[in-house]
Image 1 (spheres, rainbow, N blue to C red):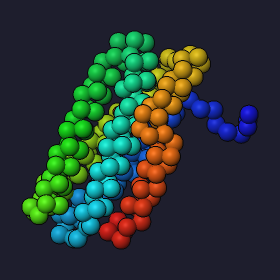
Image 2: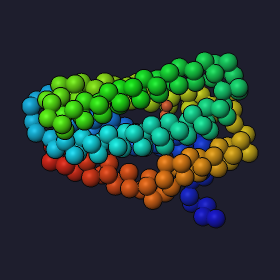
Image 3: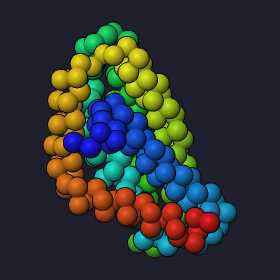
Length: 191
Ligand SMILES: [Fe+2]
Ligand SMILES: [Fe+2]
């Protein structure tokens, strides 16, 4: 084993995901700003953004939290279970906003001018991500400080993440999503 490599840790992996989630947030925010400013953005790019939100944030990242990390930490303390209850409600809120954006984007592609609602839901989504990941990062810090997970529990969660990765199409699909995020960041309207 390479000693220089940072040990894989279930909490750290989620915090690392948040860095990627916030890159997606920045794309959504910029896209919203440009739409409000009346600039042309290819609808295919907004469709790609929608796919990245759905697959990376909703399915993969929130999947790891909902199926592995939260069930593995909620019974550690009452404070945790209360926090987690709120996080789950927020996930549902995020999904609803993403769905509304997707629905309006579909209308727009069908010829109905939905620039305003698409811009509005993207902005709402960006605010949601800032708020939600900020609160979760504090929660993750707390779990780490309290050393609430044993080494074995931690390994078990990391193994469970691998199942979550398979659920969204495996490493190849996750890598493709990273490529799509990079693609969007390089688009002219992102400058
Ligand atoms: Fe979350
Ligand atoms: Fe999260």
